[in-house]
Image (cartoon, rainbow, N blue to C red; front, side, top):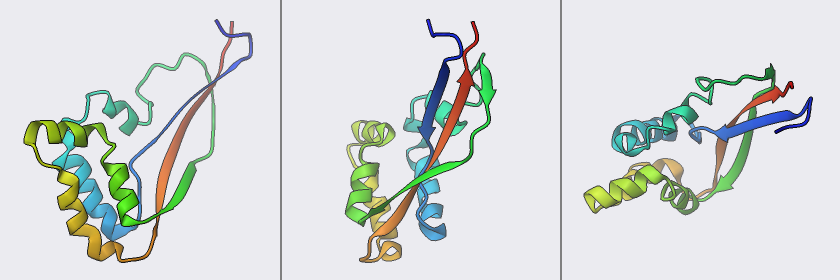
Length: 128
């Protein structure tokens, strides 16, 4: 039970973005390669929780992004944390991230890249 006039914040982050060329490969990887291995609830994140009943007085919020400067190896490590990647490996006994990294390594180069995480937030005032 929340106190009157309490705020409820529900947030998450969507598919990362690096640059137009890498993003094209990443979207293909996300949707076509490991897409069928995501839990059905992943769709809620892709929809930024907009399809979930939110019975609170919603407060408008600005767009947010946070960015990290990563090497390709750090990005590869992040991709390996995806539950869909882990399910893919369990079913197919091969890591699809390895093929993805081979495809984009020439686009990434030797430099670190900015990896942008789009944040989404639903903020609501609780009435009682």
